[in-house]
Length: 338
Image (cartoon, rainbow, N blue to C red; front, side, top):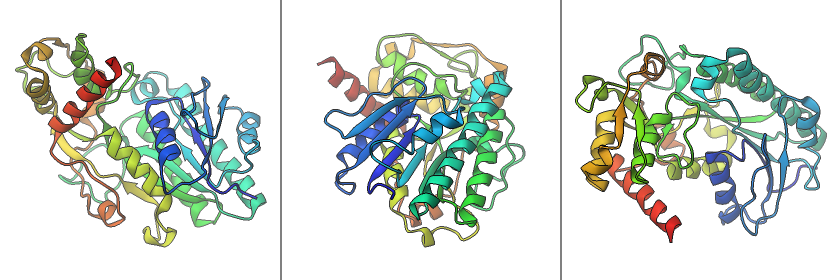
């Protein structure tokens, strides 16, 4: 039988994966949760949690199969968060496909097999991305906007979506596909994401460290008006929890894709928010070095979405723009110093 409130998280050592594990551990609506936390480097479990932590290569079907046979039994939910980030996928196409497509398919097949063994459809919650969009786009992305990615990362995410939708249609799993905005501000070290600078130009200066913005050549560059679709990590993780609770019949019958709510900002507005919270000395730590590849990838992503469908499903959206997000991150940094 599938374990009641047994949840598998792939990519659990990453920023969002670790936040999700902590949120599930403390969530009153997920009592007695048992966590199976997996990543290429063994992740850390939340303090006092009931969890097993596993170092695994998710491109190996045998190692993936073992994740569904731990002491906690078959998970009733899989959060599939692992992957190679956008710039990494673009620079190393074959490895990106191996991790972002092939290994996701392997996890999906294992969920199908073990769910059938347990006599139930495992909930398969997959984090996709706004990077599935590209090319000429309408001013506002709606649920029926066709996805035409212009990067390897978005291509891989779209392929995964098609598989998950088909597996859901056939009753193999209960898929929930969450197209994420760019998450800001991410804690930790910079990543191999084309969007990494969106957090970096806030995160590093707030710690007194230099940061490079690959858009524009100076703080006055017109390129800084590049629009971005973003959400805070706190709101995003709350939406991860909510995705598990939505009754299957509430989704559109033809697709399980939901664009998680976000809001539009610009690189210039980010810099202004940093100055409002930490002063001009923080902004002075940003250097501007135009990177054509980074700019091409990020510029291909849409920056305005219709949130109506996601909000109707009960998902949350950030309010107040970038300033409260920057202020909250600053408070987190100060709390860590105490």
